[in-house]
Amino acid sequence: MRTYDMEGILMRRRGMNFLSLEVPGLAEKRPSLVQGDFIVARYAGNDARPYQVSSLPLTIVYFLAHS
Image (cartoon, rainbow, N blue to C red; front, side, top):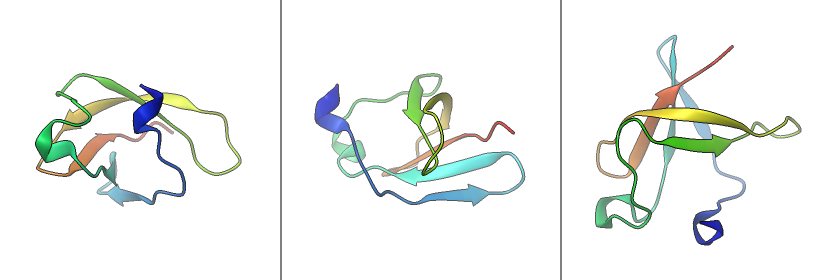
């Protein structure tokens, strides 16, 4: 899975409870993600943590933002 590691990517807040992240190749199923999968992400300078995928419209992943 390291093939799909991304660095310096901007996570955007979507409403009060969600973050989004653009993932190139997602529409072509590279990487293959489905609703309910987990991704591991981290804010700069913080520890990595898992986030559950909530929806996948084309090339953007939406996931719950844990406080």
